[in-house]
Image 1 (tube, rainbow over the protein chains, first blue to last red):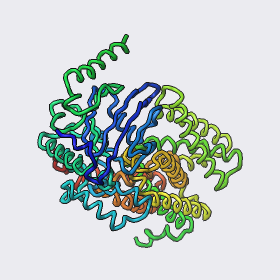
Image 2: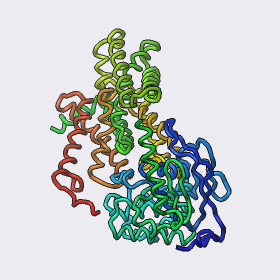
Image 3: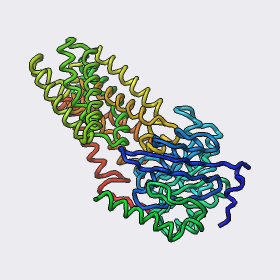
Amino acid sequence: MTHSSHDTCAHCGHHHELRVEDLLVCYREVNALQNVSFATSCGACVALIGPNGAGKSTLLKAIAGLLPIAAGRIWWRGTKVAKWSREIAYLPQRENVDWQFPITVRGVVRMGRYPQAGWWRPFSPADETAIDRAIGLMGLADLADRQISHLSGGQQQRVFLARALAQEAHVLLLDEPFTGLDRNSKSALATTLRHLTEEGRLVIASHHDMETVRDIYDEVLLLNRHAIAFGPVADVFTEAGLSATFGAMAAAAGKEVA
Amino acid sequence: MIAWLLEPLQHPFNQRALVAALLIGLTNGYASAFVVLRKSALKVGSLSHALLPGIAVAILVAGLNDWSVFLGSLVAALLIGLGSLAVSRGSRLDQDSALAILYTAAFSGGIILLRRIGVAQEMEGWLFGNIMGLRDSDLWSNFWISCGALGVLTALHRPLLMTLFDAEVAATLGVPVRALNYLLLAVLIVVLISSLQAVGCMLALGLLVTPAATVYLLTDSTNALFWGGSLLGGLASVFAVLAGWWLNIEQGPAIVLVLGIVFLLAFLFSPKYGLLRRPPAPQR
C-alpha cells in the first residue's frame, strides 16, 4: 500500500494532521491509557490493534471528545481537541446500539445535521441535500424509510457512516466496524472505507481480525494501555510487534493477579 | 339508556373530572414515550413513590394548598433522585439499590406522617387518586403543568431523542447530554405530580408508561409513539372516568386498568409485533 496519505489531502488540498501527544486517560482511578503518542493525517486508514481491555475504545472516545483527558494533548488541524467537533465523527460498536429504537435510516442520518440545525430549526434545503447525498453514497436510498432493526449488519454500519457523511466529518472513528459482518459485507465495507480515505478523510478503526489488517489499512497503532508501535502496516504489523502487544497483556494480567 | 349514559355529565364535579382526565392523559401519554425510550420505568416509579413524603412534609409545614403539595412533592422527588446518585457515587452500591432504599424509607416516613396529620380517607386519595375531588384551581394548575411540560418536551424533542438513541453519538454532535437527562427527569417528575390527584402516587407510573409502551408494539414511527401515546392516554383516561360512573368503580384505578387492557390487546394482536402474529425474523 502506498503512502499518498501523507501528502496533501485530495479532499481539500491541505495536509490535515491528527496528532496525539503523551495522552493519559484515567477511568475509575485506573490509567486506561498512558503515553500514547502518534500522528497521522487525512487520507489514511489506521487500525487500532491490541488485546481486549487495551484501551482501543477509550482512545477512540478520547479523540471524539467523549472522555476527559487527564494529561497530554490531541491536535486536529493544529487546534486542540477539547470537546466535540463537527469534523470528528464517532461510530459506536454495533452491539452497543439500540437497534429497536423507533427510528428510520433517514432519521439516524438526519442526526448528522444537528450541529447545523440546532435544537428546533427545521432542516434547510442544504441539510436535506446533504442527508440525501449521504444516504445515496452509502447505497441506502431504497432503505431510507426502514426502521433500523430491519437491516443487515453491513447496512447498519453504512447507516452510521452515512450519518458521519451528513455531518461532513473529516475524521471517522469506528469501534470494531467489521465485527459480526459476513464475508461479503466485510469486503464491501473495506471498499467503502477505502473510498472515504481516497476522498481525503481520515479513518481510524479498532480491529481484531488479524487476517484482514493488511488488506484494509495503511497504518497500524499497536496498543496495550500504552502505544507500543505506530507506523505503516508493513513496518509495524509484524510478528515482533504483535508479540510485544499481546504478550505484554499476558504479563500485565499476571502481575495484577499476583 | 342514553340518558343514563349522559347523566354523569350534568354534574360540575364530573365535568371537571373529565377535563382533568383528558389533560392528564394527553400529557402523561406524550411523556410516556420518553419513559419507554429511556427504558427507565422503574426509576420513574421510584420517584413517584417519593412524592408522598414530600406531600406529608409540605402539609405539615405549610398546610394543604396547591403550591405546598406541588413544591413539597417536587423537592422530595428531586432530593431522593439526587440522593440516590450521591449514595451510588460515594459507595459501592449501584444507583437502583440506593434509590430503592431511599424511596421506600421516605415512603414509609410519609405514610406515618400522613396518618398523624390527616384523615385516612385523604391518604387514600394521595395513594390511589381522587379525580372526583378536583377543584377549578386544580384544573388550572394541571393545565399549566401540561402546557409547560409539553412545551419543554416538544421544544427539545430533537436533542432529547438523539440523547435517548445514543448518548455518546449525541455528545459527539454537541448535544448537552447530561443536562438534557436531568431536565427530562425533572419534567417527568412534574408530569407525575400533575397526575397525582387523578391516579395517586401508587398508580401514576402506569399512566406514565403504558400509553407509549402500547403504541411501541404497534408502530416503528417515532412521531406516532409520541402523538399516539398522547391520544391513547387522553382517550383511555376519559373513557375510564366515564366507565367508572357507569359501573360504579374507582376512577383512578379504572384509568390504569383500561390502559393495561389496551396494552394486553396490543401485546397479543399487534399486526407487527403481536405475540399471535410473529413478524418474519429480521434479515442478517
